[in-house]
Image (cartoon, rainbow, N blue to C red):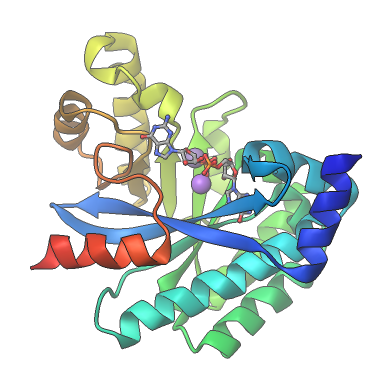
Length: 253
Ligand code: G
Ligand code: G
Ligand code: NA
Ligand code: MN
């Protein structure tokens, strides 16, 4: 109950922060992922892995993702206006928020209020999004894509993965789950599976991202396998806006 009360309070009064983790292509930042952070005065840092599921249970994940969408769009527009960076920003959206149409309004509002062009916004969704109301979700995704916003399937290859999803869904990108990436340079079966995902994805004209890249051997193999973008602690931890500014200065000059 302590965490629920604290969560309700931070949702109503503000206090979340977004951190940003770059994705790299040909040694430059090609996109950025927004990751929510919560530092509570008494609870300390609470991981989103803990509080997002609780917020989903409490029915307040809508408020969180609505806030994150607007905040991420505003931040990306700031980087663009400062000529620091002109790349898409990815926002994680809970499967719960595809059970109602409001999500579309939040997206339109975030783009309108920030002034960010839609091609610079990407949504990261997991495959669990498609389980409950696949028809309604596909319809929403088509509408979101018609706005010019891109869609990415997060954590692909983890648990409940179905290749048939890829054939039916209007998506632009696959993010290969870090479970498949970690140690890929030392495990031929992982390599084979990642290679099939990359080849199939490219056959479908999808952008392929590898997440959780932590060492140069993983990086080199993934580039050799044809991954388009790489993300992970090898390149950068998730950073606050000030740290991101420094990171961009150091990596552009
Ligand atoms: O950054 P970290 O590894 O702590 O993220 C843990 C989990 O929280 C990941 O599954 C990530 O997708 C999720 N997450 C991070 N930020 C957001 C957000 O703004 N909204 C939602 N719904 N999930 C998020
Ligand atoms: O579910 P999602 O893929 O959005 O969550 C990404 C999570 O992975 C975030 O919590 C982020 O902090 C974390 N992460 C990012 N890069 C790495 C990495 O290289 N290694 C590990 N173990 N975690 C990472
Ligand atoms: Na993600
Ligand atoms: Mn992921």
